[in-house]
Length: 249
Ligand code: 8X3
Image (cartoon, rainbow, N blue to C red; front, side):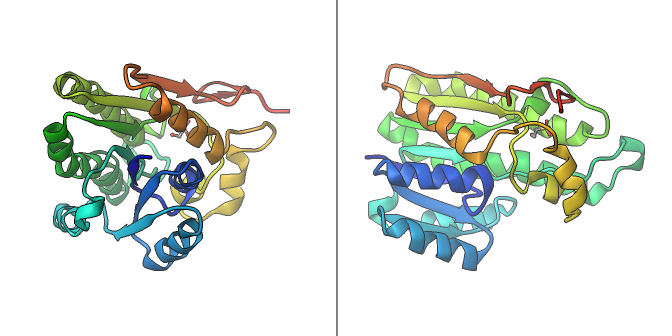
């Protein structure tokens, strides 16, 4: 039984991962920004396992620090950190880009991941044990038009994962970088600012991945024997060859 902290646990990949790890008998710390959703999920998962919820915004260092510090003693030994929180905002050329969108992506996907990690890593180092799973994207492998800032934040996640592995392997801490392709979640709805029709076109005419597919992949890496470190995993739907090449019927 592991204690697993998941950021962005209230929806999409984060939520499915929380559900799967709960079913597998782990203790789960669910983190998110929306209190009601967190509490509803806490109630649901508490029927299966021990759950603790933390409300904070990964973009706010003070909130991150005080939330993690507020964990009761019995929850402080975090075995696995899933850095899942992150989003895409907008799909526009740089010359036309909305700088508020850029700030949200850079602050959340990059700085937020760093803030949470910095706060949790010291205790893992002390115990010479731990596993960090960072959710990157296939957008890190192939930059695409109109998505330059999003792609760059995910490229940063790849680099941070590589750097973490360099710095943490000697402390017995495993680092896994996951690159999902097209996963049908609220991802596109958020990217297109609530335009459901446009979001639906992203997943039309083929079978996209589900959040459960990615939860399965994460669980494979986390449940691998202790001497096994899956460093990187890229998962596409069978119909997708790279971010912009999707075979639709
Ligand atoms: C999401 C996948 O291909 O839309 O990270 O960038 S993609």
